[in-house]
Length: 93
Image (cartoon, rainbow, N blue to C red; front, side, top):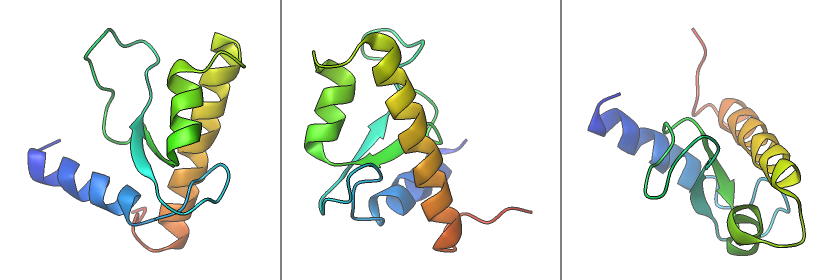
């Protein structure tokens, strides 16, 4: 992806404004950390609209196992994609 295309993706996710997991207003575009090293980011489409507490819990929380955190992030990404499609911001050919 080009930088302009990546920026459009991040802007589309950010435009959702509410958390894909809990519905709270105010989100961050959160990258999946699965199979990534320190400082590495996943592909732009592997992001989710998450509120700060949900993002923290998935990245650093101690209340869930690694597998539970990964499953929660995967769920958040799928919900984010669904929301983008329903909002007409992600169109399938």
